[in-house]
Length: 370
Image 1 (cartoon, rainbow, N blue to C red):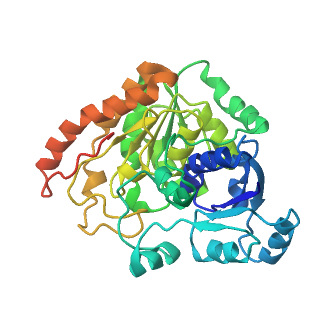
Image 2 (image 1 turned 90 degrees about the vertical axis):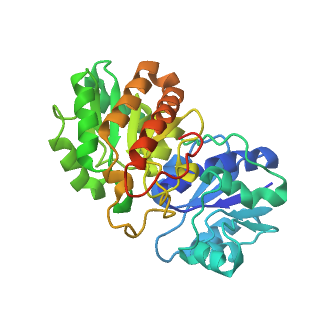
Image 3 (image 1 turned 45 degrees about the vertical axis):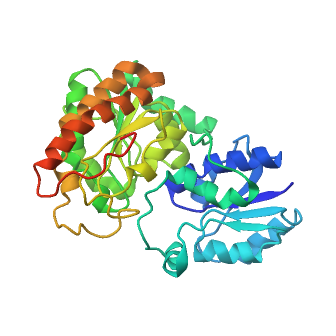
């Protein structure tokens, strides 16, 4: 049976679709093929449930791609997990006996939002579970939602060279960057966490890309000593490999948060305007630190500005809470760090709710697993 999945962006979404691909391959009795951005292709190469990775050119080249895909014969099933204008156009041009697509929102407004962006806040289920909505006609339901990506040998060798100077000390990654500035916790708070951990014998790695240079520089300036290294020059395969060597990743709601979970690294994620229910770590893989304000979540992806004008959800979030959760995760070790981080973040929720109650906006929902 020949099955094709389409998911081209962004990094976090590409990682979070893997549980659905795993379930789809299990039902089909054979690995699936996937169409994705060439930048993310290394994450799928070598996965047991993926047989072939197709790269979608940024511009043009679609006709040649379709011809190449057609050489293997028609697809028995094609599933568009992206459901944007470009992937939908490709889905309709494929030779496929059956086509399915992810419809995240109902109604005309919702459909337009799915295709072109915008629409109501999606907060009712984890993003990894949302992808199973496309598979409902096949009788597939969400089960194991742990993401999974491939680790390339050459990338692992590079990562080993970067982290070997740690000499066995715990390694904590600090990832302050996010595509949308609304989701960013102040780099100075990350630096507070990193400096305190450095004084306790932990080595720090700065995690981010070239686009995060300003945040990384601000973070670096507040550390107790220079970081062991950073990932800004690495491709996604190298980033995944470095994340796989960390004891813990402290991050905001971003692609590296999901990638770290996929390689088995515990995560502490600082949330503000986006939904922790939708984007937070899967159970047992990490925890979320967030001020439970009534105005949050206010956006699906973090695009735009704060309607309240003060970004209180992140600006008022103290470093001490994140630091204590990080210490708990490190005490538990890499294997138990995800569960320990989840527990520590949940225990911190009461104190954060009390802090939120003193602000001009009262606390709102206390989401499970926070």
